[in-house]
Image 1 (cartoon, rainbow, N blue to C red):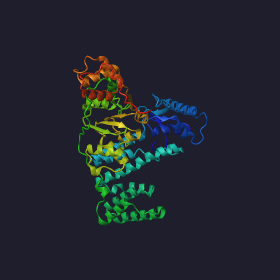
Image 2: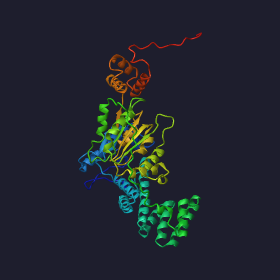
Image 3: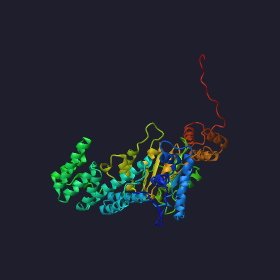
Amino acid sequence: MLGPLRASVDGRPVALGGRRARTALALLLLEPGRVVPVPRFVDALWEERPPASARTQVAIVVSGLRRAFREAGAAGDPIETVGSGYLLRPREARVDACAAAGLVARGRAAAVARRPGDAADALRAALSLWRGPVLCGLDSDAVTAGARRWEELRLAAAEELAEAEFALGRHREHIEALSSLVAEDPFQERFRALLMTALARAGRRADALAVYAEGHRVLSRELGVVPGRELRGAHEAILRDAPPARERRAAGPRVPAVRPGQLPQAVSAFTGRAAELAALDGLLERDERDRHLPVCVISGGAGVGKSGLALHWAHRAADRFPDGQLFADLHGGGPRPMAAGVVLGRFLHALGVPRGEVPTSLEERAALYRSVLRDRRVLVLLDDAASERQALPLLPGSHRCCVVVTARTSLSGLAARSGALVVRLAALNPAESADLLRRVAGTARLPVEPAAVARLGEACGGLPMALRSAVVRLQGEPRPAVPARPEAPRVPAQRGR
């Protein structure tokens, strides 16, 4: 997809068919491993005026794609039907964009670790996968919008490659590539500043100043603006014959090997949840070839014990994550949920990034967070999430990590995008409620009152939080035991009506 759309099976080209089939495949390629709902296919294939039979025709288009892959010799089916949508199976199809993203992430991790040579090699390999504009030739607005994200990745990788090369002293060698990028988009100030730096460090100060003058002229004539801070800074640095701040930071922040241990204390007297614990254990029992981040969403109402289950399992599994554990209370049930950018800032600092080197934007923080965790095994526990939008930037990119999210809803969007396991938590059954009451209160208080214990568990609705609160209140009562009969409620005398 990094260029004109094409597909092959063992080197044999796949006959993809006409515009609709190619557009449908492009939508799947833009979201590999994620479900693309049928309405998105309808919008992309027909845009403003879909026919009444649009859903049926989408199924026919997808069936034609499957047949084309089979006829080309594919052993498996790369397209899977999931509910009312389709996804491209990552195990059945190798996508150049996924390979490029992996190489860019590897390059960024190397830059963070101050290994500019490794960063340059990975970023150069990533950029070599682009064969032209992403998915060029397809006129669907949905495809064009999705392709823009991959073009942004190309430009970011080109910028980071230049910075890595500069850190190695390779200024002269990168002039031609930067000149092409400036010609491609004359309004892009970051590449113009990099080209100026490369020329100046190669001893061509006059050419560097000419590039600035041209940029100043283009920006003022076409857009009516003056050069921004970065371009002006590069110009001033050349006049002072000093390396610009960008070049001094080229290798990125040095991140020491910090092992965070942020898990709060686990709840006492944890009871039940055998099936749920087994499901969580299954997150860690995966095929070594599986490169997807394991994610679990524990959902349920207030007080049902989501946080207790998550913390109990996290402490039990902590040894499987030698690089540490991160925890954040996202305050999703309150009036002001925690902003994802704030959480990322705290996580990055906990992972060893100095506060002064934490980026300001959410996107840059998320990218650095994924880079820092690239080669680490870290457990991330996100408690009380408000929405998918809040939780998604907090997901690492590495399959070596694991994420557990608790929320009052199932966060279906997060589950669809990340393939998360969803554990829906119900109240404790009567036997588990009684067991929790006895374990929290101690055997001296509740051993001979099973009927009262059962009534108390029922009155608390089997909710662990309510059961624990009831025990605390009982322990403050002067009576030595749970009352055998419920007391009649005291109704205050009313005056008049």
